Image (cartoon, rainbow, N blue to C red; front, top):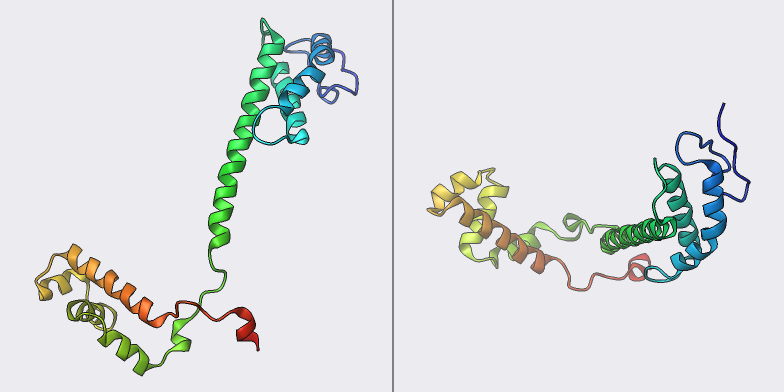
Length: 189
């Protein structure tokens, strides 16, 4: 039915390997190289993560088991596969940490400015915005005009109209949002 199964100390104990490299050969290579390979794996990459090293060594042996032919130098092949796997996991971990850091910095709760200002405050802030930007903001937000039609009225390019709109919005945000929002404890009290 199939080839012999390896001893339970081998990572191949649960899989039947009869179509590729023989189980006895894999077991022999495991017994000869696993400890040295694990020592080398622990020295690879930033920081020493023993569990990561063990996983990479086992992954390398599983990949060896799936090879059609035995490499000329199994130890060198295993080191290369283990090293590549560890470095790949470190790169993945680094990218994941960057993503988590970016997401972690985002505010969880957005302040709804409409609850904290009244019409008079909004009007006063809008009046402080330079005239062409103020006009573009009012035309777009309250007049429901497209940037193309505003550009035609203002005798500007569509791109200039769009830039001035966003610049005016940034000016409004700076005027309406406090520099240092109240702390959570001040809001609770």
